[in-house]
Image 1 (cartoon, helix red, strand yellow):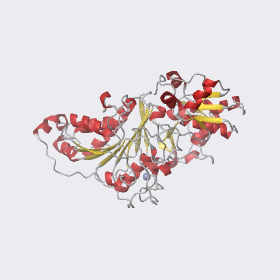
Image 2 (cartoon, rainbow, N blue to C red):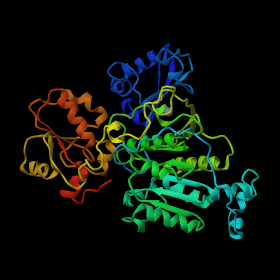
Image 3 (tube, protein in one colour):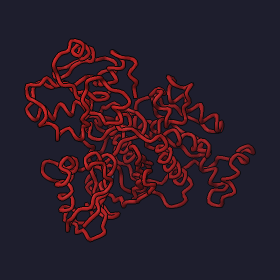
Image 4 (cartoon, rainbow, N blue to C red):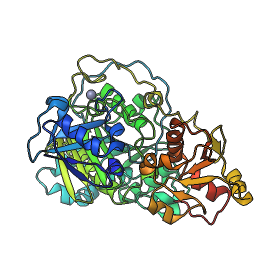
Length: 501
Ligand SMILES: [Zn+2]
């Protein structure tokens, strides 16, 4: 018998259970028994050839099975198998995607700090609680003052990072962000206040950081991080801290850090769970060693789609801030070669071994990536210049606009309207007449539909309902349409009394 720990994103396929005990002599047979019990989980874990997907890592206790005997690894009673899928969460930041200048992989090197950074009398008083710790002292505080740290993203993770690194006296802090403060950001992005809604995040964040510590130089990079500008922006910093929420930027930051030999302090969040580690430090493993490939687009929901506990980015961001300060001071044991998993609901930290993959395409023995690539293409998502504007409702074949849906309802047309959101979302708002079938349960309900039915499916923004439409189309249904923009568009264009979330 083995206990399989199910991470939050996959619990929708296990009837919300966080662990499942199954029979099995090997990891492979245990997983086969698991997916026999929960068939919807199968395609999340295995590809069409029956191999474990590369964006899901499987651990037996604290060891990655890729470095044991893969799925043939024997399992004993009392062993725990962990499924660790890649999660993106952080702040919204989208890079565009053009190939950058050719660049050779630089050998990873130690963080170099310019030596003299003498402290003023005011600074000695300000940092007195640091100065009296023997591990920091005047010398350590001078290292902090001389340090140059780049924060990618001024959102959920960037908020605590910016505030605490400024307070701690990191001399030069760069911010990369081009987003504006949205009302829904305030639940977690504590560097921004209600009065900042509508302002550029970078200005709002820089103002707070300067307010806490005027000695700090905040460098604003108000751009989307792209393959063209990433190396140029990152090269002037000692440490890069990744607080992004999307896979193209994650891979871009990773590759740029490996190519430049900069440590990449990583954090990601989803609902109640977070991950943190330090990649690419002194030849240590990188993000691609952990997750060679991104998940297919749409499989892993973003914070906007999946939600996040407001405090969670605080916890993970502060772990990143702690590692950043330790890196600069050269003290303690860094999260290198260790992936820290945090479960806020269970209030548990777990640690998994993170190994350098000799076959890693960017930091392994046979490197195939020697310059930045097109990360949107790599992740299979449209680049921002290709993506349609949010407000613009362009209705393609197989889709229906909210205005047309309203007319259909008003006319009393005979059709089936399905809402594939979760019950707790349905309680926030709904379109009258819609039947609720959450996406995770949707495949089991296909038999309930009639092939002649005129079927219209909606969700919050149109992403999940597009998947539900594809499930029906794959089952031979022809009259299926996705509501463009979901209930958000309904609120914008049909009924403003419907709350947006
Ligand atoms: Zn690697």
